[in-house]
Length: 135
Length: 238
Image (tube, rainbow over all chains, first blue to last red; front, top):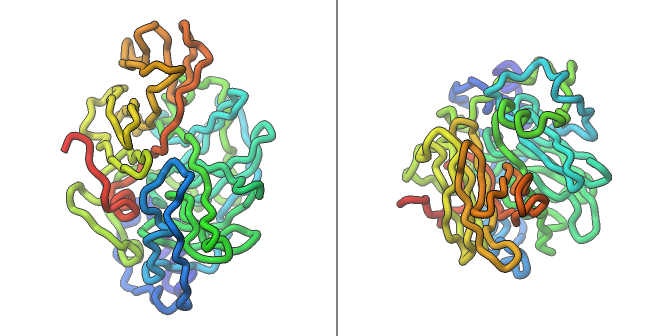
């Protein structure tokens, strides 16, 4: 847990907790984030989707900015990460979880949650096909 | 969430390819901002909450991403490549225990809807078809690969689940005008023709080798996030 960073101020607190939440950290932070004041009022009403397969109410439909807490952009995303062969991986135990992406040409790519819990976003191209993996 | 929700997307929307940064929290899950317009998108249903692309109703398409243990992934894909370790972030990388109880106050303050039907951090496979949502509790299934047949949003689906691997994903069973009956034999998903189907919904041997099941929106996640985004969700078996 990164308490030292988290106590400084809002944006960093969010980054710290975002990074810590998937770890063993469970301390209940006392700092209340003033998320309601971070946003200006604005109308973002969006009509329900029409052609999308997933036609239920969406997060955009039911958006309430009082529940949105922005952190000013945390630079944790990784662009165009390097990939290595599975048999060269030394840091994963058998029961560690990975996120598996299979490309159109059948190539298999694993994104370990151990790394993704920090980066949250990995993006690039596999076999010329853009991908976005989030966690 | 930040914890335990791995979601894959096609980053191309209406012909434009976007790249993203982490932007904050909403409903206890991280949101992201694209670098082109600064619009704020969920990583949970791909919609835009705020910013220039919100009015247009832009949306990222969710694509299959398989959540499972390293042991099972490399058994299925021994030639897999793996996102490399970066020493610069070694202090930030840490063991993850999906479904571990606990939510900090900063997370709960961003959550619109709580629901006590399940424990907040219960691992579920969330599935959505045509606006109907259902949660399949991983721990309700035996600790081995299982196929659950169901109808969701009018679509016949097969839910692949293995709690021992934190694995779950769902596919339509309609293929080439037929509705397939899938079951597990000797630890593999098979159909009546003897074809064997892998976790990505592809037939890897048998008469249907090379065929691909149609993915339906599904990913492993924790209950609090699923029900915060989809309050109307049902729970399989209830």
